[in-house]
Image (tube, rainbow, N blue to C red):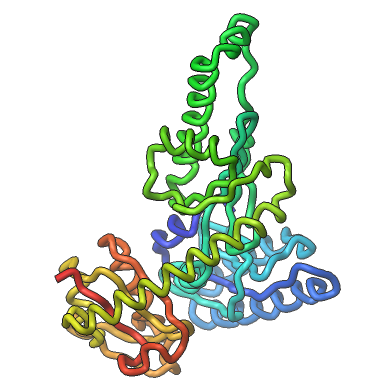
Length: 357
């Protein structure tokens, strides 16, 4: 896919079609994925022909089929998502579980995907040695992709004069520091449209040297893997990294739940959707807490949130998930979100927010 999910989220055009489809990695399961997608496309066709000018609908349907015909299902992961309108026809594969769904709206349905990614741990792995640097985008223990040019980056070859300089310890250290600095600049360039945290796999001495020159230290995990795995296969790298990252995330989530309990005791917790909506617009919300699997359609009437039943989710003018609307809005204000297991927010109907003051 040429566009990031954040870029897709900002696109607004009537009759933007999102088709979200469960897929499979292995044979024979992926052999049925094409039929599953075809059935979802048929659903989209019926809805477009019923709601649009027939000529415009036919043109959009043709774009959907053209995109789908180019998909090789032998490369599938856990899900396949198509985004199509009059200007865009893109698809992406993701290693996350989804519920099959067709959404036709003024925006692409990226919320389910962004929420799904929040439920997982989405990060970059920098595999670093003094000879090379690799960058992998990972979800939990699964590799989404390994970054291409300029990665992998190789320690540069030098002239004979520079090679002589390498014999002097201080010069050698400076040359490695310069290499690490170039690696860091390229990582931050790569992260502009996808600002994920970075987990480092490197020998301790190399990791320490890298941290001295890193520009965005706050975005780097404060745990790492002290090994040289520069030539290991990507799946092995991700599996080893996840053993450490998973434990780190679990400890962090326990701390966030402690923060929640403290906020409740200090009366810095809101659970009414309209109060939370107003507090977000004032920049007062620090963290939104929501139970996993909780969705709530709603409509805005005179600036007030009115919750509506699930049966109205696909009606025009209905926000298909007001909780995700607030999550995105709060992130724009610099807040964050924590997803808790089902049942942990029962007394608050599954949704609430801590405030800064």
